[in-house]
Length: 93
View 1 (cartoon, rainbow, N blue to C red):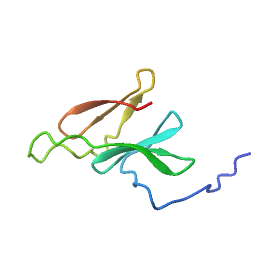
View 2: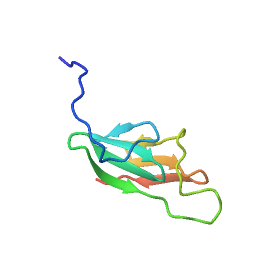
View 3: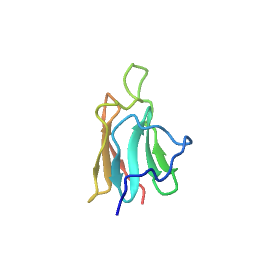
View 4: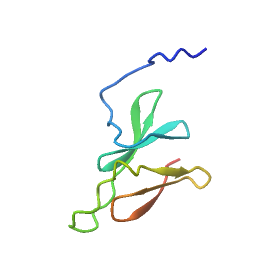
C-alpha cells in the first residue's frame, strides 16, 4: 500500500520551471533555458537539450514556463517552443 511518504530528495538537480511529463520511466521538464530528463530512481539528470541561438533578438533560447512540453511516445518526439519557434526534438533511446 502506498503511504504518500517522501522517498528521496536532492538539491543537486535542476529545478523544474514547467510541469513534469513522464516518458519511458524518466521525468522530462523545462529548466530555464534547457530541457532535461531526470531518472527518478537515482535522482540523476540523464539528458539535457539547449536550443541553439538563432539570432540576437529578445526571443529564443529560453523556454516559456507556462507552455511546457508535450511528448509523442509513438514517434519518440518531444514538442515545445523557445518563444520564437516551435521545436520538435528526437528523444534519446
